[in-house]
Length: 337
Image (cartoon, rainbow, N blue to C red; front, side):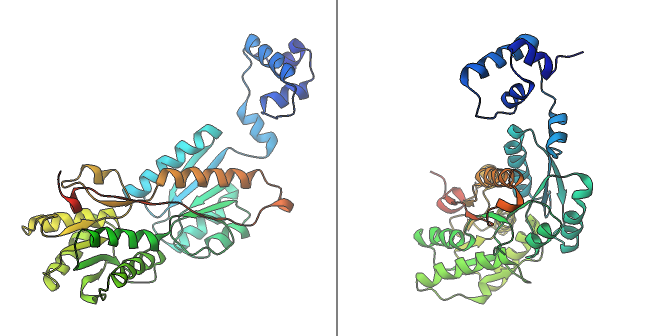
């Protein structure tokens, strides 16, 4: 039989409770006692049983991550960062795709308790996602540029400010006829924020927004960005820059421009948004808004861990955390060195 807590306690000359406190990282153990217990653990080769510890604590060690879709590089990279942030805590992350549908979000949240999931990190499409999680007793952290409901912790960048900074980057390069790809074709807080930031930056520069240069996009992939660029070329051939509300739209737009013999950035500068790795290796490399995705993931996991350690009677009020973004200038706006 492998050694257990009782064997370690006997060798160290302490109680089983003291050994348990050392194994579980409690701070109120005298340093010399901790050292004696650790020496016994090392000598006996004792390995704690994480499954048993979780069962005693009422936790499965499994959390869920739900994103609109996994084909998107942004959400795939976000998922990778969350898995990395969860690993030091010994958590397993189950990843699900909601397809951007409110009914899928509801079914996911409602079913988590049946599957012994400790908590949820969710990029929602519906504003009531936090209320749903609370109703079903699921600790949750919401991600994405959505107006907080005050019912769950929320981590995101300031989408309006980031879009304004992206547009100002183009303005500082002398671009004045700046189009936008990704305007909302239906209620969508993320796109509405980015459109608002784009318009605000133009207004600050004394440039009136031109509806002909704001193209709605129904989908989320590169092809939709290319299709939107085709529309822009047909109605506003005098543009000298385009701000795309995602990097995928920007990559599609660049491809369309190249096929039409338009030089990027000589004739038209292209700005993206998201900071996906693919943009570093596109031709030309893509200027973008880096959302600091690794930091978002780290904060989301930390917040969820805090929620899982709270007693309901002492739970803190939901928190709204804004993560800093940064503008990454590459060849699609500033050209090659």
